[in-house]
Image (tube, rainbow, N blue to C red):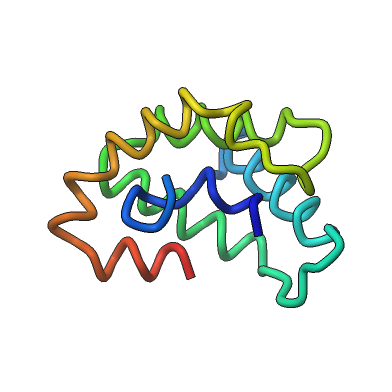
Amino acid sequence: MNFYKFLIVPFLAVAVTACGNDCVSACEDGNECAGVTTKRDCDEFCDKLEKLAEDADCSDQYDDVASCSADQDDQCKDNSEACKSESEAYSKCLTPYCTKNLAACEAALQ
């Protein structure tokens, strides 16, 4: 599903705060897209992503990409170009952490 591209580290494709709610909101909208056969538990999914961002010291970049994604009018469209700079900054931040902690990164994205 294209919605999840903004959250995926480069080897796959690229909160309690308001930004955490942005993730949940965008995820819930994404769950309603045509063709989605497996709906995510958005609270759990976003909690995992927020923890990953905190563990990797990438919270600011995560907040930026979550906010950008949530601001898109249609979560069912490929919004990767709309949030490209935010996604690239988040990916760049996560890469060193995920290189050393691959299992933790993969678990957060499941």
